[in-house]
Length: 73
Image (cartoon, rainbow, N blue to C red; front, top):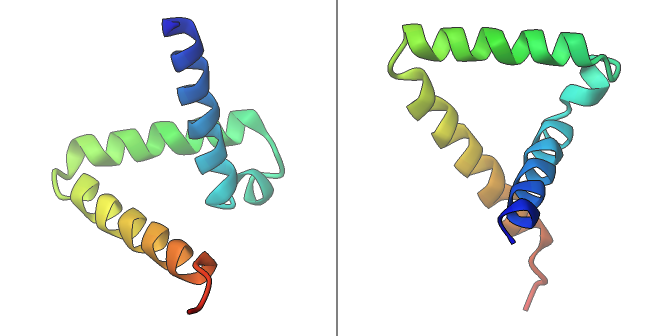
């Protein structure tokens, strides 16, 4: 059961990379994607506000996506 949950979690994370447009931007190059993520992690460690900024941006994007896919009544 734990293995299935971990697999689902990893698939969801990969979906976020795809949804953010990073796969196309990096031309599906895993080394480029990994390097970018390492850079993001380093920036977040240096700037304590970075995670909060990213969280706000992500929530707004999720909210906008939800609003655009909800059927009109």
